[in-house]
Image 1 (cartoon, rainbow, N blue to C red):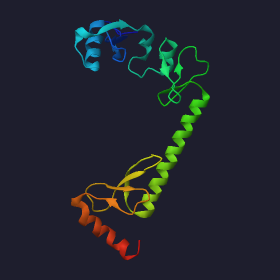
Image 2 (spheres, rainbow, N blue to C red; image 1 turned 90 degrees about the horizontal axis):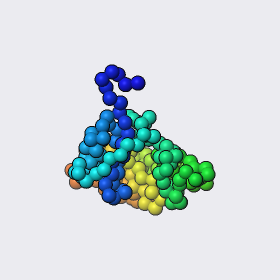
Image 3 (spheres, helix red, strand yellow; image 1 turned 180 degrees about the vertical axis):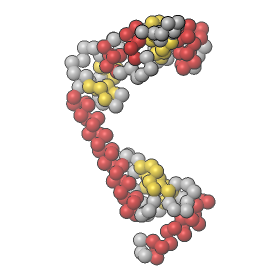
Image 4 (spheres, rainbow, N blue to C red; image 1 turned 90 degrees about the vertical axis):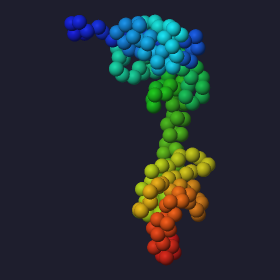
Length: 190
């Protein structure tokens, strides 16, 4: 219950004529929600409409789950296969802020994420094996071309390396520091 004199926050949908331009806003009045929504969409107050969305009131201050949208007539595309997911979909799955039409598509997403994580870890391990003592700052999980960025002792900016290549990309101002850092490894035949 709202404190005396404090109006409760309610949910509103603010939209333009384009169905892609809509936002749910929480505010105490229609006018406040409309103003906020117009700002979020990036248009003027006069170009948006605003309607109450009572089913979303309990989500004030938090993310509205996709399952709540679907339960209230909204449509989503399955994140894996693209099929439409709605209130008639028998066994939808919800994870990673995504919607799946069923277990098979959900499991495919989990498998893709596991494979991507494995590719990324393989790249990090390869960087650390080839360039010991560096700090990996980025590792892609791309299937074809896996790129890593890392910092080396004495360098100002990250170095970029592509898995399987013998060369790296070093910023010009870091070349002397790179060569000085790599010299003991070269002398040892690494």
